[in-house]
Length: 218
Image 1 (spheres, rainbow, N blue to C red):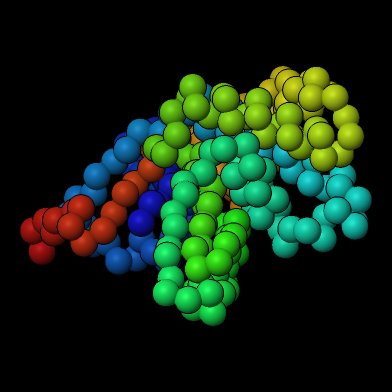
Image 2 (image 1 turned 135 degrees about the vertical axis):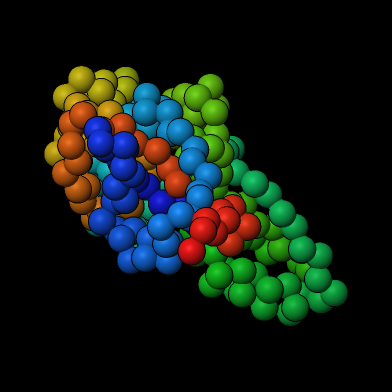
């Protein structure tokens, strides 16, 4: 589990209000592992999402119907640009392959699933989170995905790169100039709104699971 928290000037970690209920499992004295979030990479990822959201919002209805949500649209572009993991399942019969393909598609709606005879191939989009993709690969993904998106809406790739720069220079309503606010937008979800956080705060991820922390004195 990942919990986003803000480091306050008095030395406390304040969890994002989305994780308040989850944090009730902890007691005074519990110890957790902290992972420092690269704030610059978080800002770059947020700007990428902001640009791609504008593309998704501008799609003609007939084209937009191909995807069930922004996240589906982004995953499709990511896979089509080659940033995906691939797996195959060889079934005994074609009928079994058809059933398997439907099962996988139901379980992973954003994946691309292809059946060829008795073989089912599944492509799943790579995560763009900082802990899953380094800066160099992410920059390559941005160029490829924005280029593919530009082709979809019939504009020159330069137009989307210019829009991306606009989001870089003038962050939209989901971002402000504080490092902590940029960190919140590492990988925003559709219709997500970001909470206000103190400008002097910095942000980290708290990773927690039963094996990752130990109880202190009762």
